[in-house]
Amino acid sequence: MYHQMNIHAVTVSFPSPSISGVEDALQVSHLSPIKTTDPKYGTTSSSHDCRSSSLQDVHISERLMEDFLELAKDNTEKDLETCGVLGAFLDSGTFYVTTLIIPKQESSSNSCLAKNEEEVFAIQHEHSLFPVGWIHTHPSQSCFMSSIDLHTQYSYQVMVPEAFAIVMAPTDTSRNHGIFRLSDPGGMDILRDCAETGFHLHKDPADGIPVYQQCTNVYKNSNLRFEIFDLR
Image (cartoon, rainbow, N blue to C red; front, top):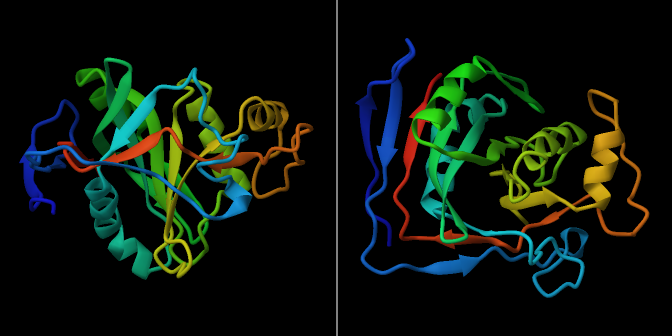
């Protein structure tokens, strides 16, 4: 069971006030791997999943995902996407996601564009955070990665190999969230060489592995404290 998240105003170095939420840590740590039974994204037992000996493990609080969905509720009810940036610190070979930053943004029913990204960078710099991923909603769509999502994911993963994307799809009754990354090298090579914009198709990698896959190096950790900065 999670403790209730406390919301309070914090002072930051740029004009817009932010909201910070800190989740109280539990007494005993609990880890659970992210699993999927959909062969389209690979399975935790697949020899072709995205887990690699070269990737560090990543821990994230499931409560952070739930709180993000709650903060996105107004947009979701209007069929507008919401996006956020995930920041983590690295300790003893493991990334711990401790910060969710929701930037100013422009949204539609199938896209979300972050604005004033220098505000995000300021928080990451101040807290010495790695940009290990991002989270966004599909308010009326199923849980998958669109072509635009894949290009966004490439921009994160090319900087931090462990970077991942969380898709929250509250209306998808079969799969309401997913944690994905581009396959490497197949998916990364395709996105690196793709100059198209907007919604478009990507060819399948030559090695037969999907362009993107479910992450198996990401664990839900119920013992993590985290902060939420809502800059909107």
